Image (cartoon, rainbow, N blue to C red; front, side, top):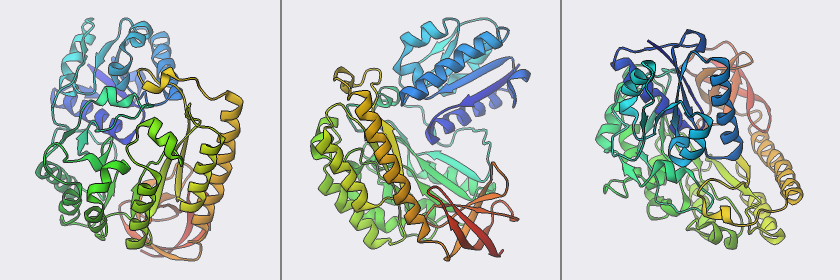
Amino acid sequence: MKVYIESYGCTFNKADGQIIAGNLKENEIDIVESIEEADVVIVNTCYVKLPTENKVTYRIQKLQKDYPDKKIIIGGCMVEIDPEKLDKVGPDCSWIGPHQLNKAADVVSGAYCGEVIRECGFSKEPKVGVPKVVDDSLIHIIQICEGCLGACTFCCTRFARGPLNSYPIADIKAEAKKAIENGACEIQLTAQDTAAFGRDSGEKLSDLIKEVANLEGDFRVRVGMMHPKNILNDVDEIIDAMKHPKVYNFIHLPVQSGSDKVLSDMRRGHNISQYLDIVSKFKNEIPDITLAVDIIVGYPTENDDDFDLTVKLLEDVKPSLIHLSKYQHRKGAISSSLREVPPEIMKKRSKFLSEIKSKITEDENQDLVGSIQKVLVVEVGSKGGFIAKTDSYIPVIIEDVELGTFVKVKITEATATYLKSELLEK
């Protein structure tokens, strides 16, 4: 029996795919690298945005049409968020819910024999320290907790991931140690909200970062997305932890809107003053920090004045990375009962912010041209060369280097998304 797995969406979901593969390998089920070789295909879905929903839905339908002799299994968030639609799209498909990954081998074996097995529902099964099949030995993803403490009105992912379930620091540290010993040079700590880590267990994110960063070896730690409301109680300690030389000077701090009114309507649990205070503290203490923000354009209650406040926020804060999303209703989300902003207004606002985004991010990167940077080479570029990361987690294109090494480069050119460089010293 041979299985092909394809995963969509976030870093967390990618790690889920690695756990599924690990469970199959432990049960002596082969993982293959092409659909043609496979008897069973697992589609590990993402459902966070409508375009992604459409993409995975189309993919499931196409697989059934193009490969009628293969068994299709659906995993990921779609299983928990929209089982009604999934049942229509793939009435003969088996399911593996995101909390049932330890049952992957049973579902695959059953599907291979012609059974339709659907494992879903919540559990407290740990996702740290479990067998994984990692497709990139240099970058190791560790899920530090699952679920969140939020009640954002626009979000459907929380219905799939459930309440917060943090994993012990000792177990996370042990997995990181093993990965580094096996050659990993980048440890990615990921969650739906890393700032919520430990709120249910009494441990703290700042302690976790320090424990991992203090492991022996030459590596870097990337800390995943933090919800502003959950960073407030531990911000000084988190900043102190992130000053460690092995931790990337990088923070992903979604704000979603520059309007307090809209933030209240979204039930985000923080206001702009608090957000600016967090950003100011990070920039004062870690001047080279890369700030990544998320913005939702056209939330149903967003008017022109609210949009102007978002524009002002971006122009004042000048994030190095800006992720823009047009608002769209999501299954089960509270805001889905509201009337959407007219498409022409949504399009106009999105285009305006996209132009601002490009200018801000390119200007930020342009300031680095001519500078000397120590970078970590982490992957092969899709168009040739290699991709390295600065200490501030900015991607740098470089030629003629070895994966997994630290090198010195001079930045020669900047775009809105990456830097180009020349090698100075290996």
